[in-house]
Image: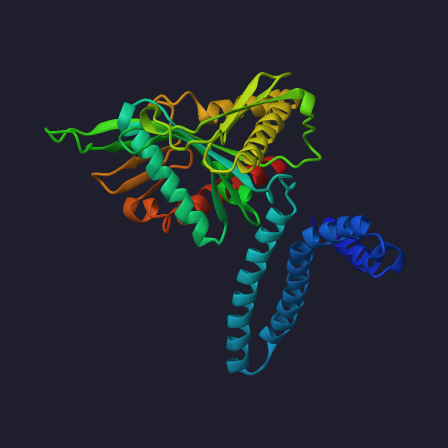
Length: 355
């Protein structure tokens, strides 16, 4: 591992030097590529240098363990213990930093939430999940933009899609894909019985233009009047847009904006992301099978997480983690603790695989 870290540091220094080359500095595209790679190595190099400095401090402290002064030896022993603990933590951090980077980690995402089994209660829970993720994202200063929404008459969603943008959005939310199950007493339940409903959540990295080529000939554009719950018209102009990708048959509809141009732009983003996901699924069937298994069909039995309102409990079944703070999690404030636990678990699994 340490020889690999030396190689990373040498590469970092080489890239830093090249950024000062006038020929590269005069080529914005090339400079941006080098700067991006250099920035991607910065945290690893900084941690590695801290590790080396800490190791040197530890050796110096160990030399003092043989000092004739008893008080000095005691101070040295305390310092050795502290430095060894710090060195162990730094080594663990470096192991994680050396893991292969997910190329999508820095990308924006399309968050898709769909009501599964449970009827109106499932649609209401879809709205609860959207609110939870929106508040969590805004707490991290991510931007949340509603892209598409199919509302129900009770105030929930059959389906809702949001674009969440910011630094490292996918890395934070990629483990949220799957079936989310809710157990609670609906407002319409007169006998106090707990009902179980479910929603599916899919987290898709936003496609970059260079990754998906969309030509005008491949996309049919239809415009129509936007409609609300029950089908009533909500505006008098043909501002809603439906895109059909002719080669694949994919259809995307957007009516969130009053402007036809904005609706088309949003719909194109969703279509590009879905096409990218489709292409990646073809290229890596195993990954596709895993994703489908995570998201499931929306059935109550296929769940990654359960939200139990009577017990104020949230359980993530993949990592056997239970938190009795459903109220704060649904407000977005407590969701980070669950996400951090998932990230730590799956990183540990990656480390096992790299041994």
